[in-house]
Image (cartoon, rainbow, N blue to C red; front, side):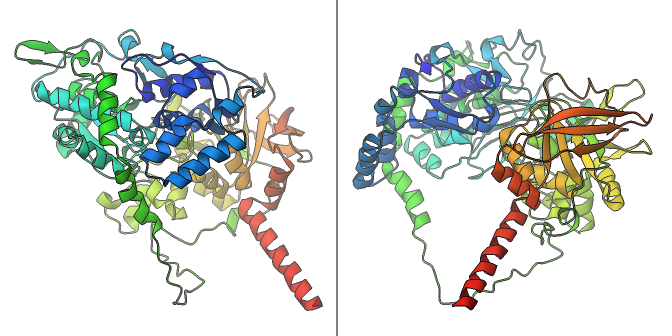
Length: 631
């Protein structure tokens, strides 16, 4: 239940970051959320979409709002025909889906959140649920004393400032707020710092149309926020290379550099190879940090610049709610949506030509290659016996740790492979763009440089950071990909041991594909994120959950062990994990089989969703042929 209304000057981003922290603390992983109450009714569709789009970050399966007047207003705004708008309203009311109809709905669990408690927020430095009130930046040690020397970047330099394509830019109010702040800043002589690489990458082509209509596009461009693309860019690790001089200064001075972006995810190592950490913020705050130039800047108190002898702070350029709403009402028009979206659906199909049924795979392509999902590890039997740990991992492992989407570096396993394939370094792009080539994508498995594999420690017993693994029984430490290759050559079945909340973040298919192709048969963790658990099952990997009180620490695991899984796999059955130690001792521990439904058991037993589909397809065609023969 959402109560209250937001304070003046608070954006949808501020609300969603506060809600993400709250809902993550309330443990809503796998839940279906419905927001209701007077607070929910006060939010625009853009605000609601921004909240719903963060569902993977607080772990929910879905985040829903009832249909009401705001929905109808949005349909009109985006150019829907009057008959369609009337149909939606009439149907929703008759079917009991209108907000008023749900006033007496009964919920399994109720939470309450006061919108009026939300202040201006950021999140970071590496998790979307790590909320930071901008007023607390100094107290948290983020903002602090810093000096700027002529010709040098300061400590905490913001090298990336990006208004990204997530729902922040599908929310006109957020983007118009950024444009108005840029206009106010320009009028007071403020500019972006020269080391900041800034960009605007809307999710919709309507954004520049209404910014131009409002006369704000030029103001954003003047501060470096020209339209760079209409898709995932910085938020997916694709902001491109830095100026060579800036990159070299970061290396030479070993600078702590950061990114500030209006995206949904800021996991370690995701945003840019040279941004050590990243912070999520609203679009207007992103523009403000491009002017400030460092995360050490106390954005609520410090002086952004001077104009005619007067000190300029954030409050002097922040637009009022009334101005934002007035500009949005005047500038955002149904015609813009019709212009962009109607041509997308006006597709003429040419059915006159014969199309080959089979794709002509090109073996030299590093972008799309015939996938190996019907052969190799996936075609073999999963014995769940004699498994060695590929990694022992801490809490909060994200899909970015499992399969990063950021830029590919030359000294990485994937970079070396692409170089051998003759691809120039400037064309490496990101892991996400090459995921159609499994030979590149496999090399992304656990390739995140921020990974902590607890099997790899230094001489002082401290866990080393990096894409590293330890081969057993030799005890040799090597790069993760080389370890995977070694185990693949040995046909060694593998297991991963992990802490709580394993698989946080977006639904990265390769986070499940990569470990399965490496030979991982099971993952034993203290808890799983719902989306990733489902993906693991879809690839034929068995998720096992330790019972409360049991962890990798209580079991004293160090990676020298081998593991068997004993028991019949049924929905949420209790299985037994046999742990064989080098001393000859055997430990038996109960684990929960996280195949939660009979359908998930069926998919897993088939070997994964592709194998299950093939079986169903073949069975259907066999039955059809039998019936035809009988006829």
